Image (tube, rainbow, N blue to C red; front, side, top):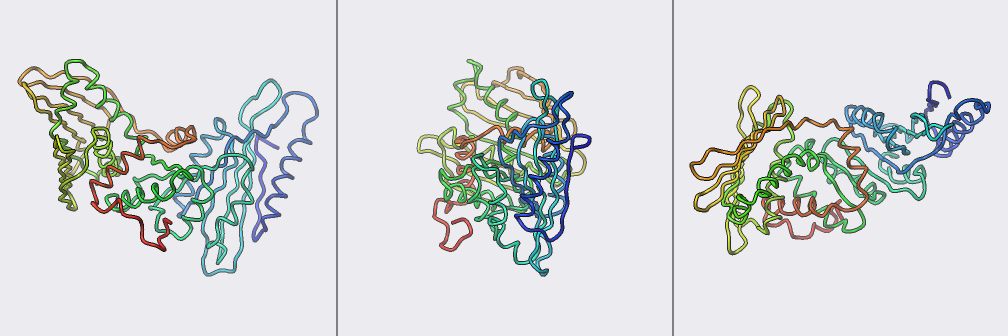
Length: 389
């Protein structure tokens, strides 16, 4: 093992060859140690991370994120890339073992990465290729970067292997439709597989700021008097492409936290209007997507009835990430708090996701509530034969 990495590549290889070459790399690394200095490696995988990289860009994103994570989450990472569908069935493989810093006094932590390009009809049977390569008795995290997975032919196969299925709704072409499909997927999977979304992690600072408004005793009564949620954003601007699924999930979070459901909907390409209610209270939601030029801010306002009435606002600068939070009672001077919400890299968000080994009830409830806001029929079971089943 030189420079902390041992590698092997092969074309048209078998699964047996892949496993054999992994074992050879480990034996070679171990035999190079002469008993002096720090032992070169110790096998310490704590999880399996499977990535289905449907495009070259997705493969590069996954490889970059895994590179940053290897020292903190030693794992067997398997990146699957679908190859040419009209070729003969074959598998091309790239294997690597990397060491990452000292472990105890004489050892380093090592992790494995397996990159597979699967050609021809074999790409229809990804689960049968991946399953024999998984490190046994370890949880399986499945990360699907790129387009929504739920209509793809390999989705049910890979979901069947996963303990946790991770997506990024920023990549969804139609989030107002795809989030509803994902809610169906969560319901169908039940306890067998947990789901998560990078955008839920990105929302954490916003959710914390909104919750902190009502930690103040003076403002707490207004939580039960909310009458409106107003959002204005520019999803076309670079850096906030994920704002549409974010604000929909934010609305779902408020809806589930307050025990509301959608009674009326008016959904257009650039505006979502809804009336949320629970029999005793009503909250109007108005989400507007402006097609502006420049770095327009994201603006969120919560309105509450009372004497005096109250308004709570967030203004997020799309370029700097600065968040200005304001709370105003009637005509009084607003209480202003400023902070910075920096855009987190994929590796940082993936780190957070790999720390979670069970279901996230708050996320699932927000997703279901958002789906109810978008589609009155979301509770119905998927059609028989659906890929979700």
